[in-house]
Length: 487
Ligand SMILES: *Cc1c(COP(=O)(O)O)cnc(C)c1O
Image (cartoon, rainbow, N blue to C red; front, side, top):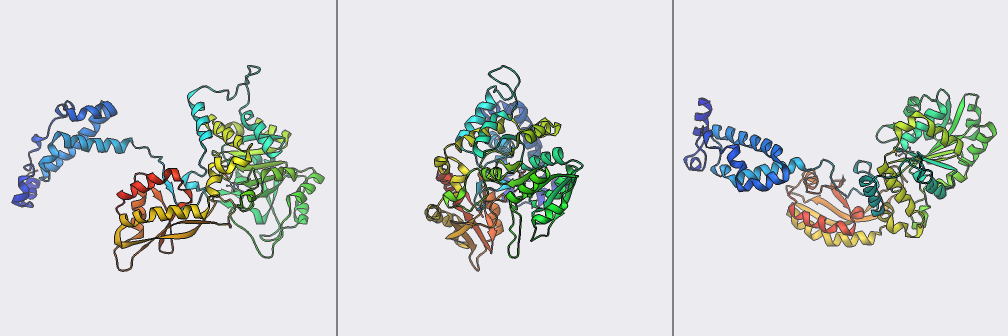
């Protein structure tokens, strides 16, 4: 300790010494008890409770003690109010939830890493109710007997898709796993080589097949598969003919694939059901809003698919869920399986899903009420007006090392929906001014460090802030916190 003290003292100038606690005088540090009784701690104790405050305070006093012994402690650090402020900052940091709202300015509307679909107010209200009051989740109010949780959404889903029966599990990956495990265990599933997809986050069709105990029978080639390829693969071991929507890629050029209607005809002739993993799927025809075409669940059911699976939080705009619609006997079989119990959704999911599905009853209001669709149909002119409003503030915050420009750009729907189509959008493009000491990486990190982190996209030595997902109601918050940006 002696060595440390002398070294510490020698390192300091005489002027600096006057404001510092004399090295080694750790005894001057106030006691926990004295501080807790000081006024400055009253509010902290009321908000965070004794346990947390004392723990943080002890840690802080320890660090002060070390600094004092080392001779690097300023006198002001010992003032009660200053200690209280330091402890408060620590407590506030600890109290901050890990899962926080961010601004999604990536241009990808359904961003899996940022939680995919944003839910409408109607869903939030339904979830709030289901959270705070008992609900008839598995309870038939008419008979007073035990019910089935799928019934919360089955009628509505059948109405919206034309299917005979419907059910819901945790996500579409779970829906595919359940379908294959129950209907194709130890048997064969025939799939075109052009549809053996990998979706981000380790959903690979061949792997899911293996996990489900089903044997994958690949037919055709990557670019061309004929009906005869499927026909030749059929045997007594065939459990399913399967079509998978190539969500995140497109094969173009010299190609051939079999239509669902053709496959259904083949399946019917041989008594083999046809299952379709639609991926995103859509409950409505998106071309109504000049959006790219995506197969609808209704037309897939109408074409004769025996089972169709799709996600709840992609184009549908609801909570994370995997929806299965189709033949009554098959759905009942899936529902009875123990795996369904392991994959079942919570009342929160069901509450949100029902509220979102209910919006589809009035398609004329959908582009306004369904958040996902509202974001997708925003016009570039709207985003351009926002860019014009926001640019001067951002430029001022960033200073002369960066150049901020209003710029047209392209958004994506995301989550594998309509992979090759891009939506004209507008936003802010930030570049480093030549010869100045800006850094896009540093700026990107600073944007992520804001109270409500801003997630942007970096490409071509430019930071792109796509304003498609910044709705007018959030613009003020975004604008205000730009003042705190310090790249
Ligand atoms: C997205 C997708 C999945 C996985 O769906 P999750 O809801 O994310 O589990 C499966 N298949 C296809 C074709 C997809 O596009």
